Image 1 (tube, one colour):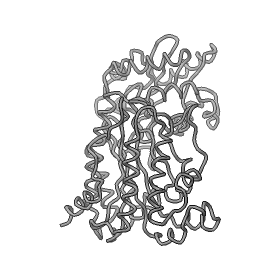
Image 2 (cartoon, one colour; image 1 turned 90 degrees about the vertical axis):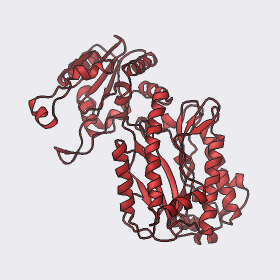
Image 3 (cartoon, rainbow, N blue to C red; image 1 turned 45 degrees about the vertical axis):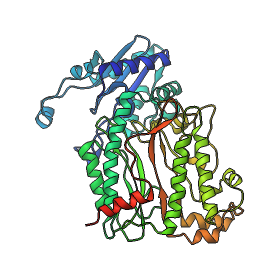
Image 4 (cartoon, rainbow, N blue to C red; image 1 turned 135 degrees about the horizontal axis):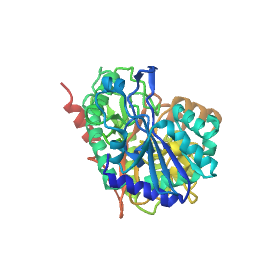
Amino acid sequence: MFSKEIYLQRRSALRQKMGTGLILIPGNQESPMNYPENTYHFRQDSTFLYFFGLDLPGMFGVIDVDSNLDLLYANDVNIEDIIWMGPQKTIAEQSFAVGVDVTAPLEQLAITVERAIKSGRRIHFLPPYRAANQIQLSRLLGIRAYKLKQYASMELIHACVALRSYKDAGEIAEIERACAIGYEMHLTAMKMAQPGTPEQQIAGIIEGIALSKGTGTSFPTILTQNGETLHNHNHSFNLEAGRLMIVDAGAESNGHYASDFTRTIPVGGKFSQRQKEIYNIVLAANNTGFSLTKPGVTYQSVHLASARVIAAGLKELGLMKGDVDEAVACGAHALFFPHGLGHMMGLDVHDMEDYGQIYVGYDQEIRPIDQFGTAYLRMGRRLEPGFVITNEPGIYFIPALIEKWEKEQINANFINFAKAKEYIGFGGVRLEDDILVTEKGARILGERLPIDPDQVEAVVASGRK
């Protein structure tokens, strides 16, 4: 939690952007795993954390723009709660720590909202993503749960994106704490990348590191030697010599800010010639993306520049053909690079994606490119100092996709399908860093994980017993 003044400043800035109305910001509630009393590890809503900071279930924040008043609705614990949880600070005491002077029991929230509706005031809320909050907002506002998204406040969405896109010094420090944990996670995974080691064992150990030094992972860990599946959460195999293991994993700091790194590791510690060739193309795309990242450029243009590096490299290997610029313009590179270069990151690993990615990664100037692969680019807008983004190019050999494109002769002028089929079983390579856009350029957040092939091989070798 930050200082009281930070939360006061954030709510004041939101008021200035909104102008009028009543802003509803529900916190999250406990979510049961298999029966009500056995819950998942609690994770507070990120918008609530940003404006109110309190990391407890069952809270509801209200910002009254017109009366310059902040309110928190929540119930104090009773004796039964104390028996199981121990003594707790009162809601008033906790609210004071984040600059909120007015608190009330949850049952009074309906009275406040009903009064505002009857007086014709504008009610602002964000698209709810959890069923419990959908039901709560539905009851408060008299809007069917399935219609809430269409009634969500566009003014509030844009105001929150405008505020949360720029990370201040305190937020960057939290992200760097998450990066430090992520560094230890990935270095451990590299050392464990030995033949015969169960994927599940590595995944469990690095997730344990995340829990021992922060609040856990910032997203479900991707760790697999079948890297052609982009989001492969299956850890059921034992590592095989000569395969590549992709580890896409991040930590969440105790302040709930995220890190998100990816490295591709040769099992046993030695890249084959073919693996190194593909790896070096992805590394060149990663380094190119970083070198181009600076204020004033669009991340869409950086993505396309990285795609051209990939296409040029694959052409040299005989996997692609024809004019590189034309191939990228036609989307031919997406057979091998079928995702975007990166996304915003902060309190969420895909920051603010619950608001709608189109409002976070794009604006009226920069719109998504409706083309396979490039359409998955989450972040395209013009970069500004204070943005935190990921840089994660990749190359994959996806059997079903190669088969489909060959059968339908998609981009056949640019693809050597016979050569591409020789790589089936290769898996994939992805390399990802977290980047802060600065006043003059950009810097990698946290200590950069080993990424040059020789460095990676040396780390894997150091893990042999």
